[in-house]
Length: 452
Ligand code: NDP
Image 1 (cartoon, protein in one colour):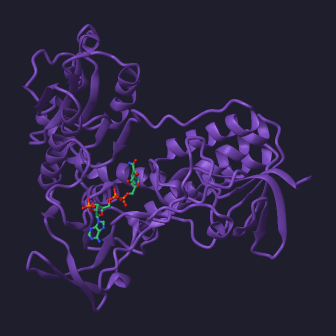
Image 2 (image 1 turned 180 degrees about the vertical axis):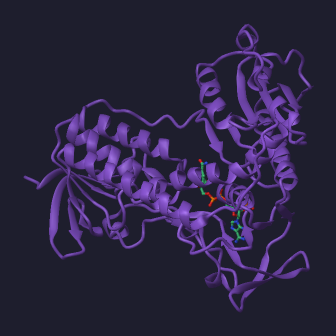
Image 3 (image 1 turned 30 degrees about the horizontal axis):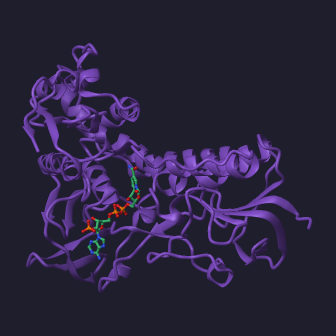
């Protein structure tokens, strides 16, 4: 049977674009890709990239104060959201152009419209035409999920934040995950009076407890009003603001409310169930270690599979798919020991097991130090950082490394190599410190603070 293409990719985000361009450019496949929105997907258009640029913008307020402490005659001025937003969107337009260009130069045919499956080898485009392909790859990502609270419709999600006309004077952020905590730091740094409600006992559930505790403490030190064990009962319009009744007994108005209560896979209306593609409880596409669904010609990668919802993971999954399907090298995706950063202020870089996870598995030694770093302590800031290793008593391997510090994202990328290679505590110890740095502490912790 002959097909129009060897591969049809649905979704032009990081994972889909990578798979399409490698399949076409390196494996010589005939490839098409459909995208109904903007090329670049969540990461480039409404996630990692604009978020990180906002983190940078928000950090300048503190830097001006620190510069004064270092003798500079500078005064903090006002933040011009309009000027920043214009430049931000200019940069996103440029990046979208880069993504489109990559597809074009690799010979991928693109369709700027929605696509759905009508049989295991046929894609139906929104204009009513159909295309056939030997393989179909679904890389449609995810979107913010609404918690279903009364008055949800008065709140915004992370998708809306980059488009606000003006910065609110006050904001309530609901949730305690990556997105809630990152935007709490950003908006607080930009001068917005920031309140955060999280329903659980401590933010960033699932991560190392000591790290979570310090991040929360520092967020509060930085001026964020964090309420743990608190969630919204209902929200109503109050002029231009939103009046929020909460489980902590308060009723307050906020200029804006940001719901950051999790994301859901974009698997609706793709025609999947009718073809026998299995969906999980959250609507995620169920795949095997080669990203193959229950229908052999259909594969899925990235957030729509809800494995580890991180851009570099989606890219890896896309590459592994091409190796498996177009290069004859079956390549499972390795989801073990993935380093990651959360761009809270201070940042959190983490790889491997938390202390709590590790001690459930085997006896461990904990090496941990928390201190005021030189740069900010000179500027009379109270902020502390944390360097922590979780070490197996039996094998001596470093099972987990957790860093809460400015620049922790950069540090954990490198520590992640050592942990992935199976480095032992003694390997860390025989590495000479780089002085004076914060990260030198990671190789100078001599005695465990506890065993568990
Ligand atoms: P998360 O799943 O990380 O967090 C959702 C938060 O919302 C949790 O604190 C959860 O509480 C809370 N929540 C869920 N439902 C409700 C509800 N009904 N009422 C009140 N609170 C609720 O989702 P995010 O949206 O923050 O992030 C999604 C994913 O995106 C992340 O897991 C990550 O993979 C990725 N991401 C990665 C980033 C990075 O790499 N730096 C940055 C941003 C996102 P509870 O803990 O009690 O369940």
